[in-house]
Image 1: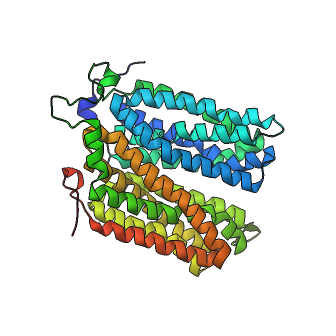
Image 2: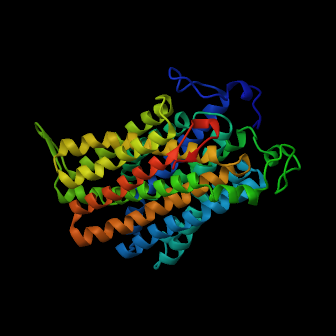
Length: 430
């Protein structure tokens, strides 16, 4: 399969408002890559604990597996980012981590046949996370460095997750729970083929001999110097901090959402049909993911600065948690899902674009993996711990109010950022 595209330079520009899904060869491949990546992993994300429960693991053991998955991703992502930038080999790294993650997830069906599967599952889960989590941020860096509108590519990931969340419920019921593993392996094979077909935008991918840590003819800084400049940038630290607090609030809320819906007995009756709490949870996820996909398409087309995308998106992202803490009306609980989807899209587009704008070209992948690892990843891990602690201490509704306050603090932190978009003039205010 060809690894070049003769029309790349002419078609790499962002799409207009009227053509958010414009079809050019390279962009479509990125959209397919995100779609396959998210739909292949959605079954594992949604039904992992069901699989572990069928293996006989306890709730505590399932919690430990969940922590391992998050903690390993936090550590591994920046390491993969630095490695990718050092060798300038985005495609090669995507292909390698894809193969390795597919091998690692096979520990689940192997462990299912053991009397004591926990140790093998723990090791396999850590390996899976170490290889699977870098795919998203590295692919994001590739999209941005080639001049594409990130939102119109990332939207395909949200759409895929919504489809997968619903679809795997039928797949698991029809086949068996192990199907989530084999669908991931098959999806990864497709993703690897797409990654191989992408044009090489970095030297090592194109076969040149300039990979490594040398300065080039454009006086681009060395890898370590570029990394130092990135991690000491006040603006980068601000967006990582805001991402951490916002993800803490969002992920903490998501972790207990199904529990909340059951606790408040959220249900809607329409004639002879009644939507019970578990059904309400599924509908809420579909609304959230569907609106999120549309919001990704248009997040950067509203002529709003990155600063206000982050602040406004942060507020919208956190409002659902506040709503859960002050009302139990079913229609309100469903209505606020739209705000959550819009907010997540706005925050994600703002932060990844700001991180790309701040970083030197030498550390594009490093910037995205640091943001994803220490902002979204670590924030999500801490969010589950904070939410669980508050749940035990004050109850589920007051817990949602507490994590909403932390989320609003993250949105307020975004006010410190001043952005002139892709002009390279992002600086902290004050």
